Image (cartoon, rainbow, N blue to C red; front, side):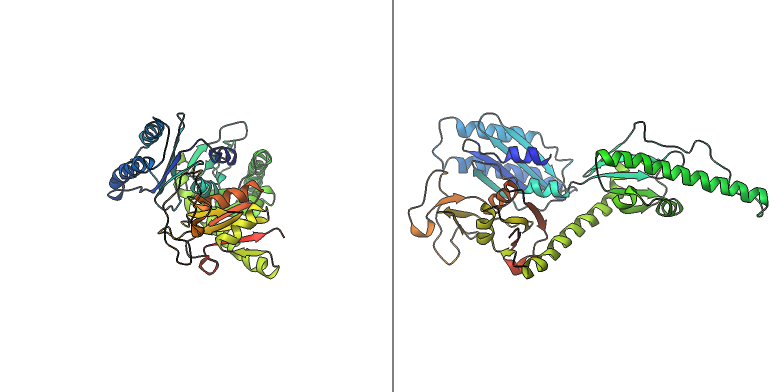
Length: 388
């Protein structure tokens, strides 16, 4: 999954395009309920599709495509969330989302609901793991929770000949031998740095170093170039024989910590934006500014979504019960091309204005950051740092 694929998924499709989003579990006994819960959501989708005036056979095909997407899911290998997409014409997609908090919902629209995929993409770092050892130093390429070992002309890299540790007292001969050993280790570290720097020139990524304490200390002492700049954390221990899966588990806390830092930095930027009068808060205001191309960075809480209506370039947010904020009575969801005639509900129904807001920000080369629920409670759960 990359930004280009995400953009393709959000393109307009013939109605109906169906998105099913649900939390899932990695472990038993909670995981046993995920399959049952998905069946309930599929039944709900089938019933909701009957509320639309669709051409003959369209609803049945969309449901078949959804069921094909569900068949792709291995419920023994789930993560924190599951997203299924299906549309008329055979299109079907299934995504397991690690580390993403979602709210359960079924969305029927002319686009897929991609905001949770964006949240996953934001957390799915590309990185390198440098496993330090003289025999040999290994390099792993990471993408989210998956790691693969790099095997090319640059890695793995071994110290060709080991120099014996100093024996006996500090005789002149032993001091010379020890100096040779230190020099060879320095040369080895410099070669590691050169090789990894070459890879970083092609694909700049953060780096995590793994090794025993003395190896990590030696690396810190004798590198001051690109590796030092790229380093985001270390893991102490002798893991030179670790498998890719073991490496992935080892570095997960470092990646989680770095994701937390990114969120905190984004929240810290709010104060500067407010003092510079480049700040907006609340879904309706941010939505309008995003469609004007003024949002540089959007901050939104993880599980915030908002059914809404649009009318004459303005957004009117509905409550979870379907009522317009301010106390108007609820109205039923309309077909995509229908418009409400009641003044309180005039305009086109939008299943999730947050998803639409994020897409508008990205379309104008802005950036979206998801933050923990409650982080933006003072700003009605969504905030924007503006270009001007």
